Image 1 (tube, one colour):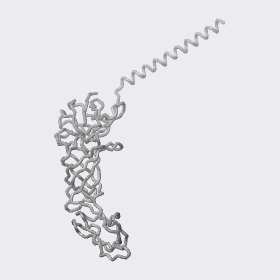
Image 2 (image 1 turned 90 degrees about the vertical axis):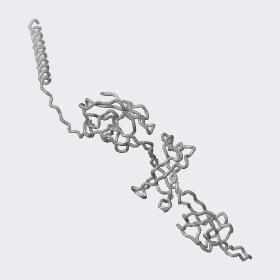
Image 3 (image 1 turned 180 degrees about the horizontal axis):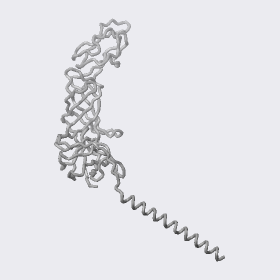
Image 4 (image 1 turned 180 degrees about the vertical axis):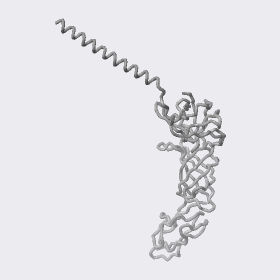
Length: 316
């Protein structure tokens, strides 16, 4: 019995010694690893210097072209159309004869009835051809007045307060790439669309050559103001999501540590440039691509419910 107990004690002592030895080896290995210098991984990045340039605060909207007026021409008598004296695209003046109608009442002999236009315009479409029956309720053709056309654009309700009657605007059409047409606001709808959350704005565009056609797709742009600001490329801005309040966006610009940081932000984004820090020198550099420097970061919160953006900054 005594020999068995002695063996058990010896075995426990040996196991304890082995455990302590292995623990000591692990501690020494960790100390050795921590004492060795860690190789730094160099990640190449592309930097760009902020630049001072003039930016414009703008409101954009899309819509369509409409004629200034559209009328239908009717015959005052019943009968059959003998001849249409005009065709699609013909320019019509008030009092001009546009069609001839033969009255076909049995037992009576009538002279052909001349249908005259009461308005000026251009023939948009012929609705009834010769031989077709016509009555005072049947339109023969449609006329449109396109000496002046209207662009009806749907403006976001968040931006409608920046639009006023008489305000100038620029209109571009897909039919004429690169060409800009001058326009002026003539009417603003008193109601908004509950589905699109937009308000229709009507603009008048001179069209003496009739190049602009009703039905064309139009893009409208209003310039609210211009100012000089320091900007960085949009590719240097990181858009982050997370626990951000509804309607807000957290944007981040990373700057190289040796340059000074500012905490003053104001303005809105152009299409390709981002308004940077107003106190930042144009000689500073910001990271444009790849992994940014982790030690010098500027965060700012932008409010997307308005065409103007408000910023809040802090350092990390």
